[in-house]
Image 1 (tube, rainbow, N blue to C red):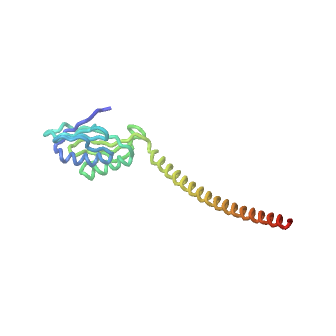
Image 2: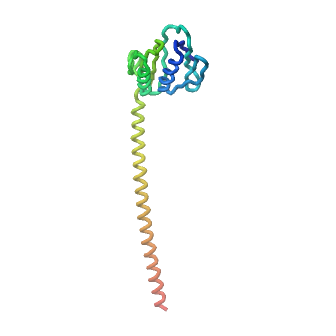
Image 3: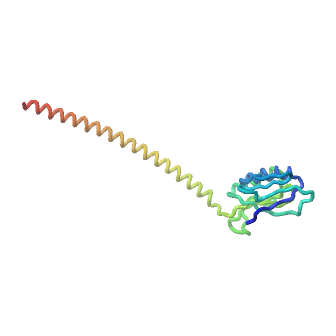
Length: 180
């Protein structure tokens, strides 16, 4: 529901490097940049950073993730880039049963979170879909094999029938010639 958020940062270049990589794990990138300020998003910039000699006090921002794996990747990348963990990836049952999040303290002391609110059913659904796809592929292969076999048998039977019909026709012809 927010149009955008802006954090004031001490070192724009360091913050840009940090947010380019850590937000990249969630599918976001810098979409607009001015001298010492830039905006991140997917379709439009929702999150901005801008240089300021004295950044405002610590801010908390939660970024939306599309999967639990993205939350994990966000946390790992942030730590790799020098952030401090403020809560490893995991469920936060005190908020609600499906609140899966990770928290870090960014280079400017801000509390940054990646969160997803859906049950962890999606990976299971994806696995079921994968299994169903594999079974369907197997079934199609078996059906093709059976159809090929049936076509071969039908061709063989047709060839036999044509041969028998030719023999019968030849016998009939021979019998008719003998009668004359």
